[in-house]
Length: 148
Image (cartoon, rainbow, N blue to C red):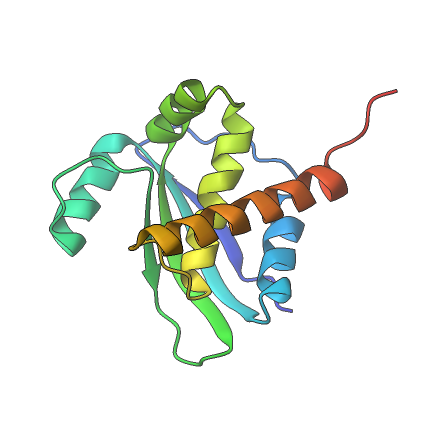
């Protein structure tokens, strides 16, 4: 699998991501039976993401993620994930989880959209949430060091 996974920062200071996040993302893609072509993950401010939401989706509200799927082949993953750092922090507080946990949830949510999952109906939302939980548990098992 090629290493075409890029992180960008728009209208927010650059921050450090866990080293293992790239391997985890690639693992999600492989597990879903896709090949990574190219993904740009763009961390931004609420204001920046609101502009994208309005311009491209005609949605006039804050959101934690906007996903654009650019695939040209059915087996590949190619797209952009725009993530509001402010929404991630606020949601982490609201759901009483760490910011890192919420960040991973939002990333995998976007990846699942690129893999063809939807969250339009209640049934779709339930499946999406269970897949998020599954991949978050894999991250915890495979990439989080165990304490003594």
